[in-house]
Length: 167
Image 1 (cartoon, rainbow, N blue to C red):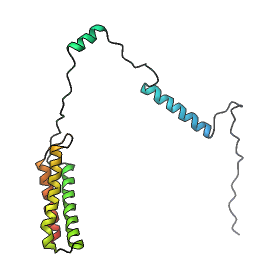
Image 2: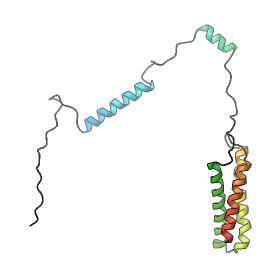
Image 3: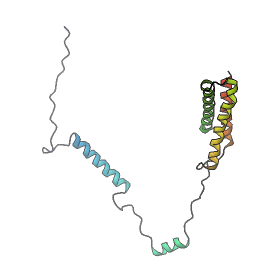
């Protein structure tokens, strides 16, 4: 004789309508909130008018700017100094490790090479990828330079992979 527990049911109040002086409800409330939020963003950003516009320069100021223009920004931004231990070095070592392991897997399992024969080719593949990345940084990379420390991290990843393969 297990009966479900009865809970008191309170009658729902009808939401006040606009005619009775109540607030918006449902989709009308969401639309009103969206419109108010958009109005606040437009007002704060200054798109709503010329409230934040600078005064017009005088003729003397314009002449002074033409005769003595402001200094131009530097054409080349110097890169940040290359730190010895940085997250970048861990990425280089991990990528070199994975590229050697991937090359070894492809040559041994898919091409049928022996492990001893495939190892130098896999290591050369990892070294070529690391060197190619550094050459790209040196010649075409935006705000980057050639880094010997990145190459050292690549070499560490390659040697770690070689040791892992030879186990």
